[in-house]
Amino acid sequence: MSLPSAPAAVTIIVPGFEVEEYAGEALDSLRAQTREDWVAILVDDASTDGTSRIFADAAASDPRFRLVRHVRQQGLGAARNTGLDLVETPLVGFLDADDMLTPTALERLVGTLDETGSDFALGAYVRLRPDGDGGYTTGIVQPWVAAATDPERRATTIDQHPAASANIVAWSKVSRIDFWRRTGLRFPVGRLYEDQVVAQRMYATARAFDVVPDVVAHWRERADGSSITQRKDAVAVLQDYLDGMAGGIAELDRAGHAAAVQQRVHLILAMDLPPLVRIAEEHPDDAYRRALGVFTRDIWARGGASAALDEESSALAAAARLW
Image (tube, rainbow, N blue to C red; front, side, top):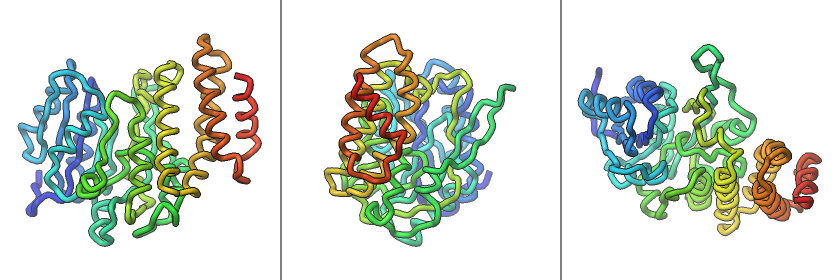
C-alpha cells in the first residue's frame, strides 16, 4: 500500500449498517483510487453482523481509515451527519458501504475542484444489478444522468444548467466542507430518501458547481431486495419518497430557480411516477393510492404550464384525479 505523501485533500464518509456482504468491496474501491490523498470516516450504525469487524480491520491496517460507532442505530442521515462533524479536510464526499467508487472518481472530482474553485463537483453513475448467478452486472448511464453530467461543465449554476437537478445522490459528488458549513447543510434524520432535499439545496445555494461525464460510482441494487429503493410498495417508504421529491422541488422553488423546478417536475412525472402508479393499481391499501394521488395532483399543478410535459404525464394527472 502506498500512503499519501501530502496532507489529505478529501474525506470520504462511509456509513454502514448490516452490509457485511458488500462493505469489503466498497472499501477496496477506495484503496484502488488513482488519487491517494484521501481519508475515510467509517460510521458503523450499530451493526450486528460482520460490518463492524470489516470496518475495524480496515482502520487497524490502514491509517487513512477512521472508525466511529453508533451505540444504537440512527439511520443513514444521522450516520452521514456524524461523519460531517469530524471532517478536517478541505473537501468531503460520500460512499454508501454497499456501493463502489470507480478508480478515477476522486482524481476527476477533486482534480476538477482544484482547478475551478467551485463549491462542488458531480459525476455520472450506473447501477449494479444482480446477474442471477450470484454476481452483479454494471448497467449503462441512464439518460437523465447523462443529461445532468454530459458534456463537462466548469463553474456552472443551476440556472445555466437546470438538468443537473436530476443528479440527486450524495455519493456522486465531492464538495467543499466550507460550503456545507456556510450553508448549514445537514441530512434529514429519521427519513428515507434523504439525498433529495440536500441535493436540491446544494444546487439552489451553490455559487458554482462542476459536472464531469465520467462514471464515478456504482450503485448497487441488492439481490435480496433489501435496499430502501427496492421497497416502494410499503406505504411508509412511499411517503418518505414523495416527501423527499416534494421537499427537493420546494428548495429550488423558494430560491427562484424556475427552470430547474420544471426539469424536476417533468422527470418525476415521466420517470418516478409511472412505476408507482402501477403499484397503486393493485395495492391493497387505499392509503397508498391517496398519498400518491395528493402528490401527483400537486406536482402536476407545479408543472402544468410546461409544454415539455408529455401525454404519459397527462395520463398520470388524470389518474390522480380519480384517487
